[in-house]
Image (cartoon, rainbow, N blue to C red; front, side, top):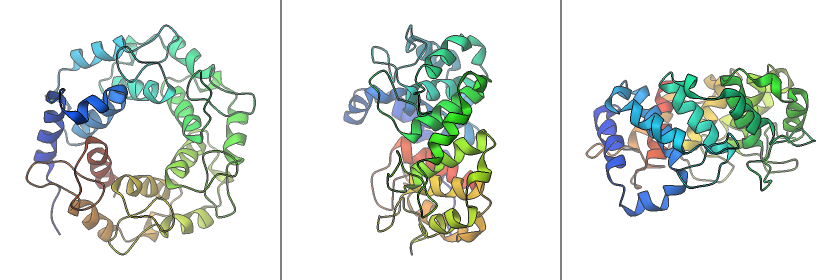
Length: 287
């Protein structure tokens, strides 16, 4: 079995920021905040966060904040709960949460909770259990979880639970590994994991491992490094990670590396990107 090409991955992450005129950079411009979180967290996991200028990063993040208190994916874009969490997470990485007006950010997030306990992503109203997790995670980091109706938030998440033990994006939605991570994570933060049938959900999750060792997000789908993270993390939270073959999973992730130029792809021999590099490195930490 090979090894994680850590130095190459660091070089790859640092090189991405320098290629601002590339096609990939232009089409990702609107969600640069997420990209910053993925890349910077990867560097942190690899012990190289000091390779970037923290003051420049923090200055840019604060320029992405709107009067509403929410953050946009980049300067000049609209605020969304997705980018708000990434902004808070990056500031936490640098131990700089003190630059925030925490009440202002918390007010933005609490204003997105709906009467049924769900959360919208922004003022346009899309509802998804991802946003429930994001709101709960972000407010927990800011120590403002008491500002929302936690009971209603938990009950809405539970209404998205399916007969197979998994969770969907809305009530009746198909069970999906990404949504399961969000729902289980939110329940864990709120001390509500006792609502989960851990054996039933653990069985659904461990069945996501395919012959190559990778994990998929739904039945009959291809394995993917990012789904490997969401499944692995969920199994860890419900104490069922021993139900998968971790050695085969490690081999799958290592096979997705570009050992010459750095970076990790969704599956072997595909193009690498920051998103999957982050999840691949994080997978290694989880295992």
